Length: 123
Image (tube, rainbow, N blue to C red):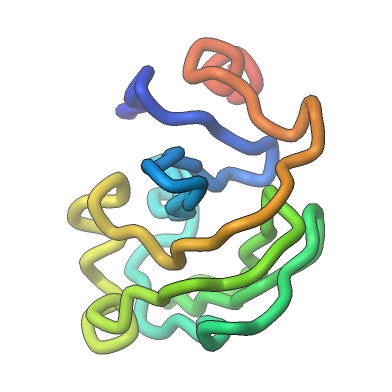
């Protein structure tokens, strides 16, 4: 499995990329997409919606299960990746390119872990 060192991770299997201007991209890790199997549907929030750290902001459906996706920050959804809603299987093909939302807000201290810490969590 692949865990880019340039990203941060959550214990609930989301990746976080800090962008310029205080925005963050949030997506699902390679581990999460492999565990889910073939992804067939994703339900995302709308731009302007409030999200809270540790609380589900979306759900994703695969041939195996329906799972919640949890927010690593408290803030506001600024943009959604509408292409993901049209082609949710792209998460399986390229999980670190298939961002779900871009959001702005506060990330609680200790919420994010490094790629090395995430790999250790999975061991």
